[in-house]
Image (cartoon, rainbow, N blue to C red; front, side, top):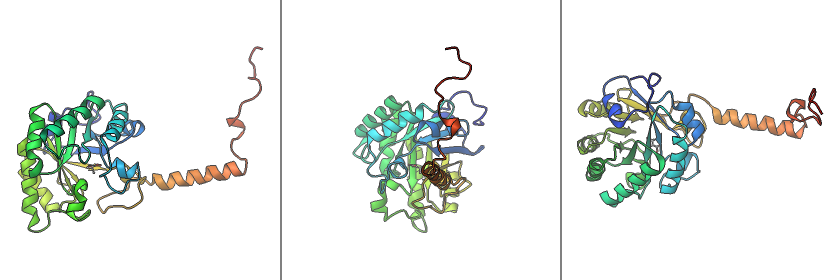
Length: 277
Ligand code: KIV
């Protein structure tokens, strides 16, 4: 299925059916204009809780609230017509148990129109995923580096090297068996990502994983060069909008101080030439 040929947004089952085919394309979005820009090019768009860091200047994703996710989810929904929208469940909104997860997932879907939720965790989240899926909530899982757990993972480290690979594979298998329709693999060694991709019957979506995954995702502010606090190895910058934006703002400031802006074309005459009085 090509994103450009599609007339209506895909469903989670359509994404699942893309397993092993043309790679699934996705990016994060947090605002209407960004969503509009990527709608025709992405199979799904993730309202990621990375918005806490790249938009709100938080030090991690841990401070992101349900209210922030709802507000940005509604903004993204206004910009999408052909890509599916997936929304992240923020830290603390699902870990207590399946009922809490259902309450908050249902709210995110009802108030934003998202087609699915994403939550972090493997074996430990399998029961919760099964509970949600059985009650009509499609779930995208997220294993490997799960940023909401940086305090127990010891930072933003590559996950699953050496002996840890078996546990990570078990996490991916557990979420697939629980009914997740796809799984994000973040910061996982390439060979392990390939092994997991071959072992699962649901698509793997890589970020810092492997070109062999069934799809790829990046944080849009990273790939456009808008978030410049740091650049992870797995980020490819396709533009330098942060630098270009700062140069444009500096040019504007110079123009204003030199009275070059506004120019004659930006101001209004007392009368409209040719208008009847
Ligand atoms: O929050 C986010 O942007 C994510 C992606 C990095 C997968 O979870």
